[in-house]
Length: 122
Image: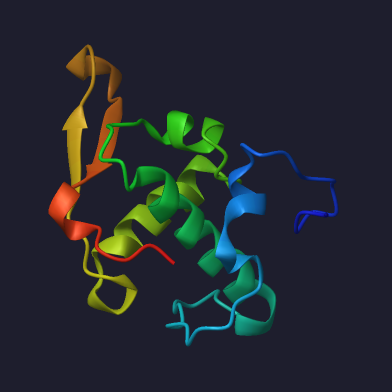
């Protein structure tokens, strides 16, 4: 199987292989913004959104780097944007918590989903 970058992906622990979102059959909310172009961006963004939601459903706090290392392909900026999307009603209206981790002067934050907010993972 190939990822959206053309690289081979696979293995029992690979979040991209184990997700039902590899082939979208459900109605999907659309993203927006000045630079969003559905033909180029929709599939990639919804796949990353679903990957972040699937990984974070356990409620464990993670930094953006830890989310990326957990199998969510995308930049930390894109992962952060998907966490913000999860808060929007059209993307589930989930409760995404944030707190500082470690020395506050470093500006490192961790994120987690409230357990009651994750009712239906795709």
